[in-house]
Each structure stands twice: as structure tokens, then as C-alpha cells.
Image (cartoon, rainbow, N blue to C red):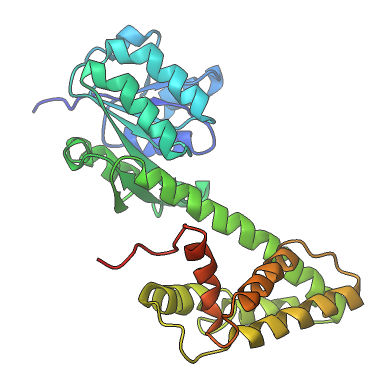
Length: 298
């Protein structure tokens, strides 16, 4: 039986180590990290071979990057690209922007090497448990050449499109999560000050027909995608509710940032004449600014 080609993994940090461990169950692995203890741990746990020099990669057809910054990824690629065989594929699992993926491809192309964005949509616990997801972007042929490694990392994979699309999806997902975190913190502070039970608030906000879900699964997925703003809850009514929330926070002495700034958008949408439309019509502002929230109809 032919021994599979080794997979090189750069970065054995909080996410990189469990990723390498998953790959190491199915493939011979080569690993690199500045932390000698992490290298020793990988050797002991799944027989990984430390990378002593870039020349060690002469027979390596798949490289996985799981690194702290785009600059570090670029530096690693500059060092290893001349030593990889033609037809090799680099899987960039680090959180980067599309511009960094394109820069990597520009660097690798002269050597006949492809890059695929395989952004991790999960926390460390999910990677350990095997429930992580990957947001993929790039040449389907390059993805096919590394499908076994991708499957070892995460069985759930979503192909978002051309090179950089997976990275963009990851960054957008994180942006939403981080912004919602501020809104949730503000909501928790208001609830605590108002004597609202926090567990009941969590149940309310997580209800599929209310709270956090409805703006995405109904107003964006149906109203905005279909351009249907007739009927529904008028923007003027949503703006009125937003005023009440600001007044409540002021009465309770709770500082607001995200909720406060969001109210300004409702003011602008009302001033633009969208007051009687469903409040999803705030999306019309972005279209007016030349940044539509959905692609134009074909």
C-alpha cells in the first residue's frame, strides 16, 4: 500500500494543535512552531515530524497554515514556496482577508502551487470535537487535490466561490458575532438594571420567531433578498421602539454604543422616505450608497 504524501502544518497554537492532531490521525504530518514544547507534544501524541528546514518539504503536496496574522502567513510562504513540488496546495485556515489570499496566490503561482482559503468556522472546542466547519474558496480542482486533508480537518464544508470568498465569509461571520456581542452586553446591562431575569431574556432572544433570529431568517432572507418591503412592521414603528429603548437606557443609567448608533440608521431611513415600508427597508440605504445588500437581479 502506497504511503500517503505528508501534510505540513505551520502553527500549533490553540486552534492549530487540535487541527494538526485531526490530520495526524489520517496522514503522516510535518509540523512547525516556534514553541519547542508544542513540537514535542505533537511528536509524542501523533508521531509528527518537526520541520527543521524548508527543504524538508520537497515531497510535501499539502501545506496547512494556522497562524496568528496575515504577515506571518506571507513570511512562511516566502520561505517554503521554492521548496514545494509543483502542483502542491496551501490550505490557508488562518483568519485573513481576501487580499491576503490573493497575495499568497501571486507569490505561489510562479512555482506552480495553488492556495485555497479554508477558513475555520468554529471555536477550539468544536475543532477538538470534530464539529468544526470550513468556509472554502478557490479553484475546485485545487480543492479536489486536497479533499482528504480537508475532510480530516472538518467534515462540514461550504464552498463560497472564487479565491478569497471563503476568507471573506469567515471575516463577515466574525464581524457579525462580535457586533452582536456588544448588543447582547448592552441588552444584559439594561435587563439587569430593569430587574429582568437574565435566563428568561436569553430564552426570549434565542426564540426562532423573535430576538436575534428574525432579522436574519426572515427580514434579510426573505424581505431584503426578494426586495419585498410592503406591509410588515413599518420602519416608523421600529424607530419608535428604538426611541423607547434609548429612553429606557437613559432612565436606567446604562451606557449604549451599538444600539445607540443603530438608531441613527433608522433616523436616516425615515428621512429618506421609507417610514411606511417594512423596517427591513433600512437595507435600501446601502443600495443608495452603491453597496447593495444583495446582488442585483439578473
